[in-house]
Image 1: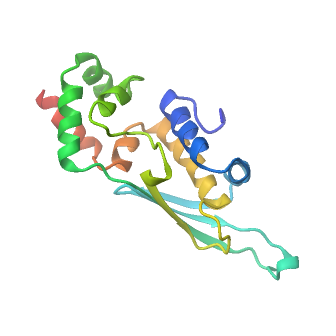
Image 2 (image 1 turned 45 degrees about the vertical axis):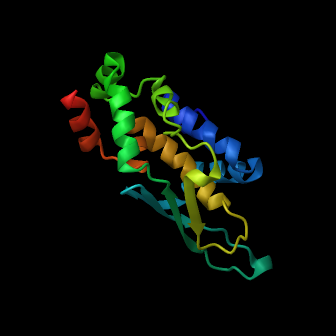
Length: 179
């Protein structure tokens, strides 16, 4: 896990995913992420799309390395819930100051829990996933690998976690600045 995340929010993201996803698939997903099998990776409007290389397996008639499309779409928090969460966050100066310094306070989930909302995923209901691979199980190893890369991206840009849940960095900071 340390290879994919350094920050508490990246580690907690992986911890949340590891509670939801089968450990065998996660293990294969980690090897896909480490092995650079994810060829492209984009995050836009709460949606993650990646191209992931599959495996050559002559036993199954796969002689050419396939490229699968993997999608992860996070459940969006409604605008009214965001307004309520922002009001709770705005009432705590320590949260505002850390967020304005591009850090996510380690107690930020408390503000969400007060309103029965969560920032980090808690269950499979918090996102929809799909992959064009022939694996019948969802999430497959390709999707699991992309989850680890999301955690690494969260280390670089913690506000991505907010974007994945439906509010842009600019909108969040503008609302917090008003307070």
